[in-house]
Length: 342
Image (cartoon, rainbow, N blue to C red):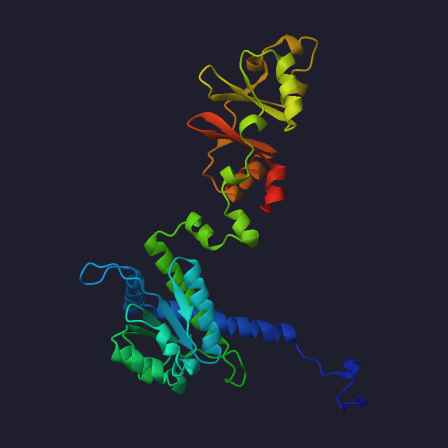
């Protein structure tokens, strides 16, 4: 066999290996671990949700608590813990990650008696967690332990132990954390979503913590991107089409909203309506005679992403924004492009 300079087989002579079979085996083992975990969830999970919710609830004296969820873990569990802390914080449960190796060197000061600790350790015997566990016991700070061994140091010290099933790791040597960390991550998501639902956390609340990027754009409201005031193409029902066409042309939206005697949106005239009524007497008709009545409209409080879905579903390019029946704005498909809501 020919060798490369490094002594390895050349690329065209590398041993045959089924990479897809390996990938599917990994995914199947991790899916199996998740199924085992889902089946094993019981009362302690609910206890953990209530405990975590309590860090922003009321204490025994009726005083509002202002605590946070302190997430900690070592190694791969620590990497997962950072993600769990970020997910909790972005869904309405204030959280932060404290590295267990730094805790005994001053970072214990980040933890207060108003907090709750969420500690991750597959074995439950990570020596670096000792200082945090001891600190929690000393100051009566509630501790949730995510581990696979209920009789471990973490399992026995936890106020609420969440015990993961001893599912097979995807690593063929049983060494690299794979299935175990997938279960930890999924359990963290389950806790975050249960808390989100318990607290009634809405898409609007979510937008407060996600003002930037694509997600922030999707969470903007219609009122933030709509055209309003003098920019609106509007006419009353009695206006001659000769005048309505001038307004429609000046505003350049390809449509004009038609209002009734009370100022409510009664109809709309689009380029399509003009083509359907094209004839010698078009200019002598009134806007009310040409309009399409009861057009689709949206409220200013609607999320921009929802409004975009309506435009796509209806295959239209513009929507009037109505408040208490009266037109207060208009959004065009180009407005969503400019705002990044696409």
